[in-house]
Length: 91
Image (cartoon, rainbow, N blue to C red; front, side):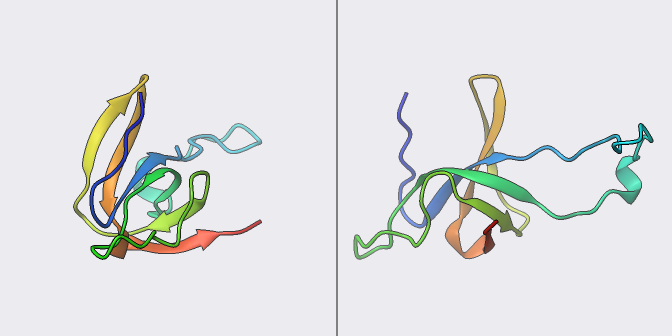
């Protein structure tokens, strides 16, 4: 299935946070970092038809409170507004 976001939206696959450290210590949700990261799955376009400066596979940090979540192939994905993308993580 091919999904192409309409407008200035980005489809992101959420990256799950580690709940246990490498040494086996459980990290409760109340002390985990609130950083939201995801992998770009699909990208929409600006209103004038130009491409957004993201591409499939980019790892991004995003903010915002509004997102539309969907389940694709058993994994959580979400549509977010391009303006909520804060940074691209480069390694």
